[in-house]
Image (tube, rainbow, N blue to C red; front, side, top):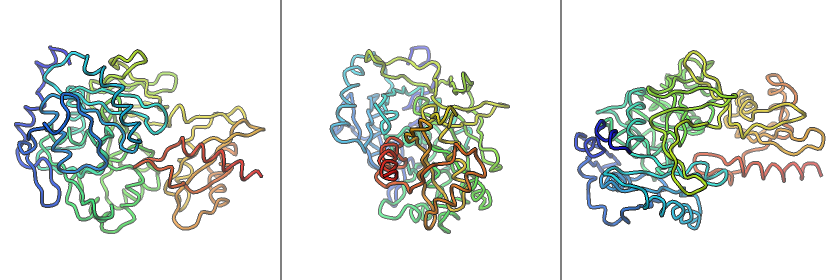
Length: 430
């Protein structure tokens, strides 16, 4: 953060000092902002590595205490092996220690860790503050509101909830860890919650948790495409769904809008955020963009972020089509995996879908689909349904259920699905 910027923004500690009421709530435990300012000496300082599976009152209090000291937090993926965590942390340790310091903390999270070589992203307090202010304004989160924290803190989505509560004066509520997810949500009072579509689907299938969602102010849904069928069900149940698009580089949210019709899943960029399209790719400019560790092992500021997402920007709203690296070519035709996934999600009983390419001697590559369904999987019925919506070259050659081992927390690893698809297709051809 430069000297000029520090004169014009409130510090993290100034926000903490002005925060009244509960900052963290977990069962019978209630912690104020000042309760969190305990001695963080049990953590390594000034560089801190935090390994968190699920948020807890003590863990979040520790994060707040460390940030109030102006230290740097490194948050590797908990689902990596211990060696992978140490390797990732050590890769940035010396670089961070050699950087100029000020009184503000920094965080380092890792992007794309489950799909390839992890990319270290550094955010300053200014980046987090801009993100939190813009997000809180869009979703109406402030003093008196409660955000139910259901995301891992090592993901920027989980970390950003802490920032929004500190900046907005709201409360972080933690669900009971000893209860099934649906029951924990149903039993906890909150105004805001962040979910991926799979979590929303499960909560909508439970009468009590569905009723709890309908009482909320904002149900923020992102991380994967929201199907039109699930969007319709949420609207019919009066669940206040806010469709959101974000990225690690921008410290979380980029564009967010309340869902009003299942036919329009686009979102409006947050205040101060600019999205444009360059050769079909979405390009972002934002004060929340951080730094990335380049090949020379230096942290370089991200001024314009080429997101890797294909999309459109029309009438001030962004519509994400899919990832550039999820596109493949079949018989000379471009196939965006997310386009096929969208058609699959419109099939009866299909509530989760992923598409990856498999080798084809005739076409080069063909699509294979992995789905989660209610009841038994009927491959031919699903293919027939997709064929009514898409050209024949986009209809999956094979359809299988999603293997559990490919799930990495709240997401599914496309890399693992691709490897599985290759062996599945070879076996099926024998």
